[in-house]
Length: 262
Image (cartoon, rainbow, N blue to C red; front, side, top):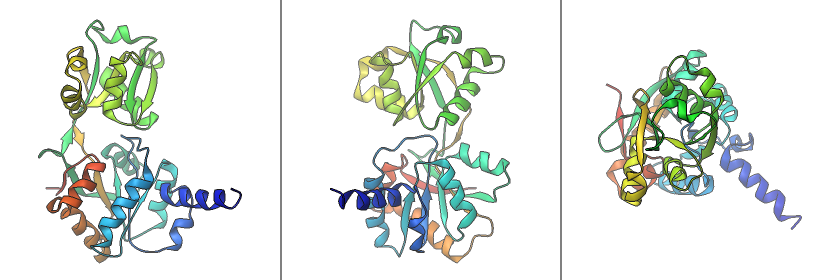
């Protein structure tokens, strides 16, 4: 057991981007961190992507579970592609990080989504959310930002009185309401569509209290002045929807394709 634990720890650090040992291998990478989800199986995500990518070049996926580690890589690496939420990209651009959109993820032909605040039908207004639990997927900072946007101006006091329950995925958030673990949930509209298929009775118990502004789905971004290596990495992403294996990997990211920004 004493010999196994260190090996497992090194593997875990490599998979989730918890340290810098991963950079001894300088192959081109897709760096992934999404403020809107909490992926609980990084090993599977990386393994499946790396198998797919090995058929298209000497490329790797490096997922991160810590925002600060992902952002540190942006400052140290060049010639790679960064997969992140549009909300996170805007945050970085405000800090003058030179990232720009190269591709936008698609879902059923759409490149944008909006978040919905859903609750059981006896919750008829925002005020009734005081001292309640709201379930949502993503980083706590992101969830607070979206909830603040939905509630609107003048609701700072109410926002402080709401407890956030962080869950892995949108479907977990809306189901948490049905199971009594939360009073309301924040999810993409697609999360509600999934609930309607999986559990029609739970879906019928919910109604929408408010909506966020529309924003892009997952973003593929590069540092400015895209070079040849980045162009090749982006080309691999564009073609993923053309094969069954590519589609299966895209599904793990919550999208079904990529589209160039018009």
